[in-house]
Image (cartoon, rainbow, N blue to C red; front, side, top):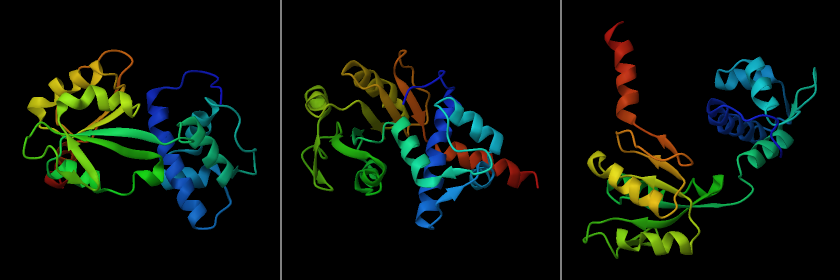
Length: 209
């Protein structure tokens, strides 16, 4: 689907939230939804939803709302979810192993395709039917499986070093669990998951009640 304008990153971040809510609506048997009702589910205004979608074309009709199944299909197309995306997982500690065993990825177009670690005690072992490879095999495996995306579950002190290697072998998107900001070149996208930082943002409110 051709975009009318280049959407801001914040719009791209909201699209998966719209898709998730639309999937829930389908599971509930809802076939049509207004921008108002959809917005209330994810704490976004109806006007914001209409503006976000306008970057990608015309959706729905005034006074009628959106066809839930059709809109979900269109958003999945925008997000590139008409294909399955192989992902490399770097770091097979407790967190990495839990991620490797998580079965929800495949239901959403994501497939953990390769596991890597630099610990000799982990290399060669299998996790969820996949063999853990050493980082020295990163380049060949990444290219064999045509992987462009990686999940980084390594300690903060090693995250930048590993990220540099990932970029060098052609990875263009990184989801990092390491509590540090990565420096990457243009054309490489990074998202962060830092539960401690999120919890600290909540302790503020508890401390000031």
